Amino acid sequence: EHGCQVLAWQADDKPVIWFDAEHADESEAVIRGGIPLCAPWFGHGPNNDQDPQHGLARRTDFEVTVADPFRVVGVAETASIGIRHEVVMTNTALEMTLTLTNHDQKPRVVEGMWH
Image 1 (cartoon, rainbow, N blue to C red):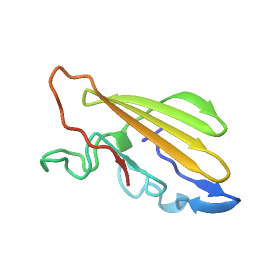
Image 2: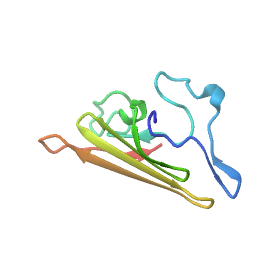
Image 3: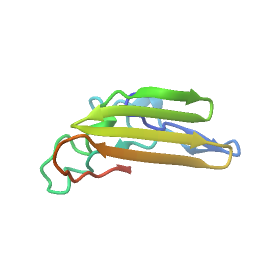
């Protein structure tokens, strides 16, 4: 739920993505390891004027709207940007879909990525 972050995944019973639980909280409010979700900006944004670094998504609690053993959908609203992150896992593939929606009255540049 926190940051809607993929922490671990295995393909054919071999770890592909993992994190070290002993060092997972090295930084305040940010989980280290796995695949962090960076949105609605990366770094300090396209104009280098946004904080915190890598956006608000990884510091936000998401509402889990679908929770099947191999599919998770998390949604959050932050900085007038709606964030929807869907993760589908199989034994051979990991598929992630990120949707960012501007709920503001004016156009806005957004960035979204996995880091």
